[in-house]
Image (cartoon, rainbow, N blue to C red; front, top):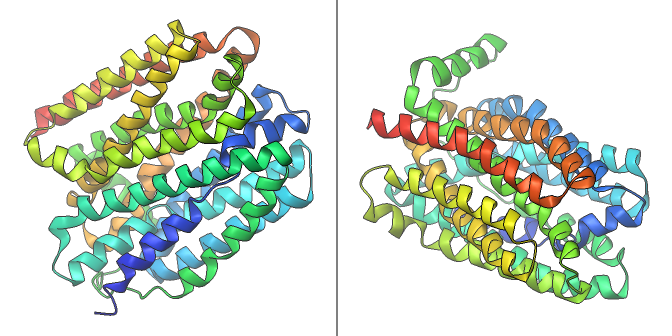
Length: 387
């Protein structure tokens, strides 16, 4: 039964690492140090590039040396990154911090889902993965929602205070990670060679067509939801939302994503085909167009719709990828998925930021609707043809 405790510990770890009191005001924190929206988006691009560069090697490391060790390293790198945020200022210091947090994110990405899935295999309960992953993602969103309320009020006292508290909270994630137990399910581990990584990449994109299109669809959704997360605060500022409400709004958005995430397995269970991928794509596209037309309080409705979609689609896509992946290379494949998402966001984020700075947020949202629309609809169509 001890291995079963991994699920509880992963829920606790998700709750701690997503208790992001800094997130509701992080863009304002950067702007307080003189950064423009373009520079803020460049910082997010740097973070995404750091995640992308270390993503596939980190998943491979998790498959070779163990998910637990990789998760422990993740918590340490993320904590050090926030120590730098707390002690230093300016674009270059923040860039170094983003790289460290990015490495931490890449080490966690794939390793967490793989550890949960392999724990369930060991317990003969893999059929409930979508429910468990959805619950885990919901806990993260509910945690971030609660932290958002606190972060907004803390920022009223000082824009720096949420960053300091965030650093202390992240320190708590380290002992939780150390307490995890390594699953023994994945015994046929890949060989320790670069060729083995290339073989997994080749298998993912050239042989397993469904897996390829699932990853491309995930990339489109990732760009959409990550962009919305980082444009939310400039949007609040554009509509002259009082600072005290930032945390409440951030909390509400994450709470809404948590609700759909928690119930994702029920929605997934009602649809035996993959048409919901097409419906989800259309919802995202229409929401970005409508948001571009409504830079006002009414536009908040469409921000919420995007977050509701994010909550549902994330655990569903992870489950679909897990089903189509062998255990011994699961963390690597999940890391390939995250790599594609992050590299796509790293490419588009500076352009979206530049358009937002020099033209308007509306134009950034219109461009997002086009980019996401092309890749999401194409991949959703391909996946439906492969069923």
